[in-house]
Image 1 (cartoon, rainbow, N blue to C red):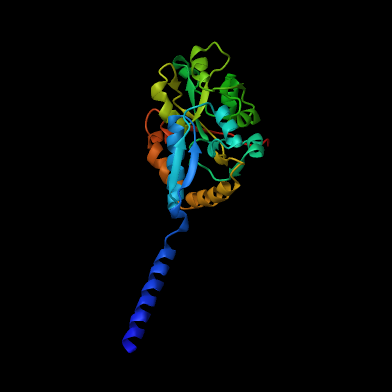
Image 2: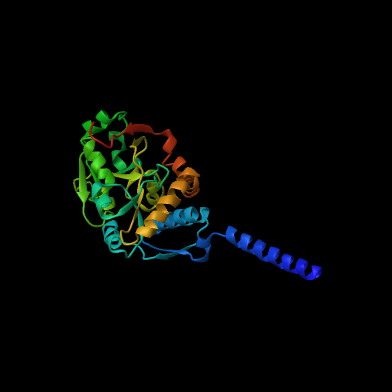
Length: 275
């Protein structure tokens, strides 16, 4: 009887131990988080890497579907409809009304360090610029996508800007031609790193960086409020624990190399709200 009791106690202890070990494995690991994304190959790579690392940091596995490359305006329609789940965008009042937002900077402040694409022969016109007033005096017109968040920032700082509806990539040729009413195209530091090797008809302005205090954020489809709740928690932890910074440094370390040389530029500070 004593031996039977010991054996029973041993089995109960073993079962209890297995149950305790099972409790240490996050329940969320059993089912991957399914995400459908879209965008340019470069933006998709960054977004999918960032979301995968951030969710993995909290014990989640991820299953991502890529809908492919399409204009931002189309992606926003798909986000509203629920055909894609998340999108990294500049914050605007209109977007915040249409989508659920996660108030966390998604690029480690690289996107709000703006460097200019200009026609190759126009660099001397910018060489003397040191202040915002110097730049305004040039009378140069920026070209941007109509829905870009920094279009509002340029306007707030009395910088002329022409918004282009539809696919903003037309701006590369518009700037290069010098005949379409736009003189330069501002791009985030991490964006211009990827783009300048493909844009042989344009030059990277050598001296200036326009800086404002507003990183891009993560917008989530309103059709999945439970996903928004999850990503709000996950991305805040990713910011706090340095995951976002690590991913940005890993994928965009070239911002500190020629021709971008982010740390060697004259800073022109822009405000995000009227003063």
